Length: 429
Ligand code: ATP
Ligand code: CA
Ligand code: CA
Image (tube, rainbow, N blue to C red):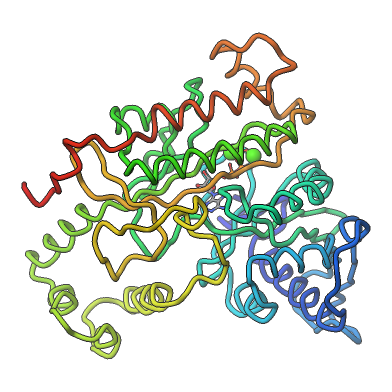
């Protein structure tokens, strides 16, 4: 945070970065329209296109009020191909990225990266370090060889790599899929690595409205783990095994499984409580058979923000997701056997139960995979944690990391549902 409370990154105001990269991305996507679709060539992974954005505009760039900047687009043809692989139409991508202001997310990470979320909830833009950007560039051919063979994966899906240059500063950005829906309340969020070394959310993090907890917190909150139907459990673990094999092959470490939990029973209780507090807005909404839209036309006593939030929520829930194969359920290729038809919850969450038998929906994916074993310095903490957890043979570190990660997920975090929980829905209480 810079002077005057403005968020800054490398001393550039975040609002300026957001506005400028939207101009840059718009230009990059627009420029692609004139290039015919064709098969990918190896050199497509290496190309970089640079455009200047002077104040007054130019033949192909608009005038703007930000500082003058340069915008680099890495591997534009290759990323177009990847977006296509996930069924993202150029117009839709453009609309998501550029037609509405981005929202800045508070980042619980230590790296100082900034995260932007598109208004429609589909994409996240993350600032990355020079090394990470370079690594992604090198990773692309192999990474997408894998993706092409197997689009059902929990690995992050990268849709663009850019560099915003201003006053001789470089801000590198990756566009990727958003794992956590913001239209539904996530009662808990975890960033899990399978390590216990200093893996507890900081005090500052815990004081946030929606903190991201870590491994030790998870073990405290869910000492028995999260319970999945056997088929779902098997599909999830199989997908993670496959993904970890790919990560290990690239000597990648330090990644996490991001898990967002929506507790359906808790949400139900919250609704009831709100109704008991005699909130007219809430009870209207619950009325059976009432068309969803009525809530939008009604004059509400609540503030404008609340109203807007609701409009947006309804829009995003009723809409198909833009990115194909991207929900947690699709990623693990499991048959969806919904616990209950819940229409105000986005589709694709993985059904699960907690130790009390409450119905949960899990939203999850693997994140932060641009740390290679070779980027030694940044990984010092990871090394310490692995020595702490018993790894002594340094050459095996990526494989040790993957194994420890998988063990933790398969044994501590996720469990097959025991029959005692299976038929005891929380309705009994
Ligand atoms: P560090 O290197 O210190 O761990 P970082 O800056 O590299 O942090 P990440 O680990 O990538 O950041 O992510 C930090 C947090 O941002 C995650 O715990 C999660 O809350 C959120 N986040 C990251 N990627 C996504 C995503 N694709 N979808 C939703 N949330 C995300
Ligand atoms: Ca991380
Ligand atoms: Ca990181």
